[in-house]
Length: 317
Image 1 (cartoon, one colour):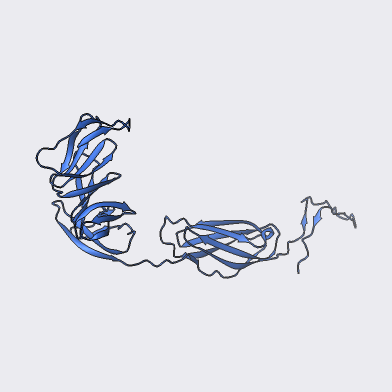
Image 2 (tube, rainbow, N blue to C red; image 1 turned 45 degrees about the vertical axis):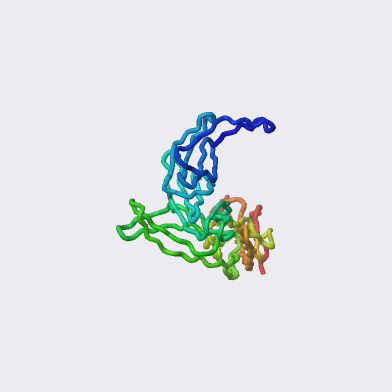
């Protein structure tokens, strides 16, 4: 392995040369920060510290991976392609790399790239081969010696997946999981019946959404009234991704009918639904602006008082 200074592209200069002991055939190299990972047909995976380019040195290795052709680093995982396997290796501690998964493949793989957790492999015998990269499942609950529960990551492609469960000695059992082509289901709102309330009386109701696949979906809910003068406020509370409540407060002393439009949307689809809200009038009793009570004395006879500030409610039908 040679490290070359290209600060002057027209005059590259070799800084250092590193030779491994014994016979080797380096096929691929990947670099992250000050770490270089080399894939070799005979000596497997070699990890070098290149902090000082003039003095590279080995800090970790995995000789159990043989006939390695290519390497890709994503975060703290190194994906190593061999002739018939794709390995995922945890390099969080570069001096102690750990194999956390592998998947077999037909043919003789030489180079590959990764797009959306799918590896596309240029194979010497089979042409283009695509398969999911091996992934370690972090969410795991062990209930007893024979039962555990896990949360599987959502596959990003249809096909057959292998789930392997390892013990401390790297023995494992496996099952096959078939992922069928997904059917896109658009968002929808369940029908809401027409509603009635009295003047100056808020009303609360529950409505339900469907086909909201995950809690992280970017779900937006808006509610509008066709007669905005009739409505003072509308508040929305999402109890879950399927269940929502709204509270509608009529404007003061307002009555009549209005169409209430519910609109839901996410990054994929949109739906809307309307219902009628009827606000019924209520006859308000006459009110004095003052609570002062006039004094009337015994045997004073008839006395006339003129009342001011008497407010009558509007005529109702």
